[in-house]
Amino acid sequence: MIDNTIFIQAVSHIRALELYLLDEGKLNRMIESSTGDEAMKILAETVYGQYISKLERTEDYEYMLGEELKSVYNEMYKVSPDRRIIDIMGVRYDYHNIKTLLKAKFLNKNLDEILIPIGMYSIEKLKNTLDNEDFYDIKGRMRTGIEESLNDYEKYSDPQRVDMIMDKYMYIDMYEMSKEIGDPFIEKYVKMSIDVTNITTFFRIKKQKKEKLFLEFALLSNGYIDLDIYNEYYNDSAENFASRIAHTDYYDLVRDGVEELSKSGKLSTLEMLRDNFIMNMIKDAKYVSFGSEPIIAYIFGKESELKAIRTIMVGKLNNIEPDLIKGRLRDIYV
Image (cartoon, rainbow, N blue to C red; front, top):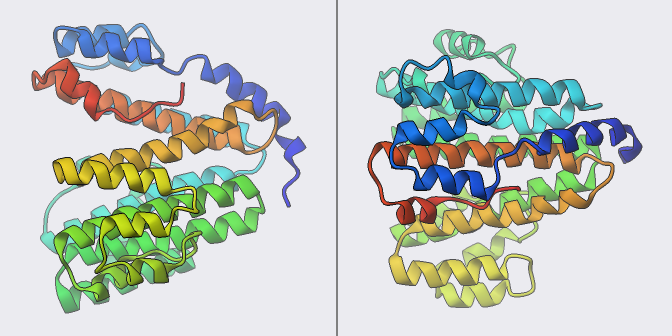
């Protein structure tokens, strides 16, 4: 079990950084602004101002978001007394980059613009590894995921299966890392992330009317919910599935998701509810005086802020109505 007292200094630093997170009022001002340029002027009043001054055009806002994300991870590595806590968040970007590079390889496309320079391996390292198919320097589960993805694509030529394989190994990695760290909150975060991903996957594959075997292939292990429940209720109604997990923390998520799906048929609503569920769990970290929780929460909160800015900027640059933009925003940490 990790000793939470080692986080006292880090938490004090995090509390100071939290003061600079964007609140709902600032985001609403951006949404209600008349143009993308006006939204950017509002953002220039914040920590993002240091990047905005370097932009040639408002449309180049992705540079700003990428630089701030790198800054967050660099700062967290300096602050955290145990770098493994940052690794468990950063490893998601390694897997994102590997999935992107595999897709680029299979489709013979350049997808460099969606690579994210965060994680345990540099983008250059991952590119060389995949170009040369020499995986010796890539750690075990990640290497196994790459090799399995290459073999699977050769057999099925299905990029969606490759995404699922890499996601499976990513969550195995995160779960094993959480067990190694020995922090109950981090393990809970990982296991709940697995569960809500499985719930979303269950409804997506059910909506696509694919074979149950495909569901079994896609489901992630190491969550709180027994995988047999998904298989048992795959051909049953969504309402009965919701009743089956009524005793879990996910009942409201599934009930609301089923209701929204029946109204709109859009999985994006369920995905938003999923993200908000994790955010609500993360928000409890506001009341923790020492422990890993505030570090994980700050990273997650900052990532949510960046997604919110991206959603707003896409909306403003495409002349989308403010109410529609608001409807697409996830909950924020502040």
